[in-house]
Length: 150
Ligand SMILES: [Fe+2]
Ligand SMILES: [Fe+2]
Image (cartoon, rainbow, N blue to C red):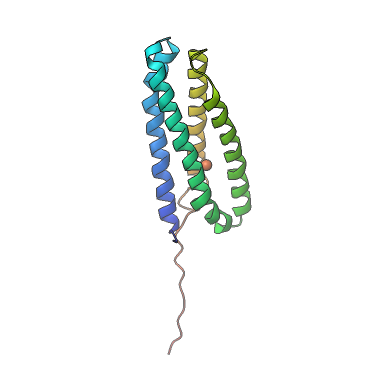
């Protein structure tokens, strides 16, 4: 299956929007956890786990559909791919660390780390949207083929 660049761009942007919605939905729960409300811990944990899984699927998706296009899209392809690979390696590490943390032993510290992850994720998505997901990079080029005049 071949996807047009504009379609790839739209798919990834929709995923980013979903992640932003997930982060916003967590905000109130994290406040409650930080304030010591034990009753909020279980659903906060479940929502964070779900968000981390969604994020990892997003990273895999970028690698499957966006990475091959970036590689060839312009003269900066190799640098774009290198920076994506480095970013994703680091993000996978952060996600595994976060998934292993026990929110029960220090809920406020856990809520802080989730917030730090969220802030970094927002920055990363904004950065991707300015660089490799910009419409200037992911253009659907119209290739004019001059036919024979017969
Ligand atoms: Fe990414
Ligand atoms: Fe992304």
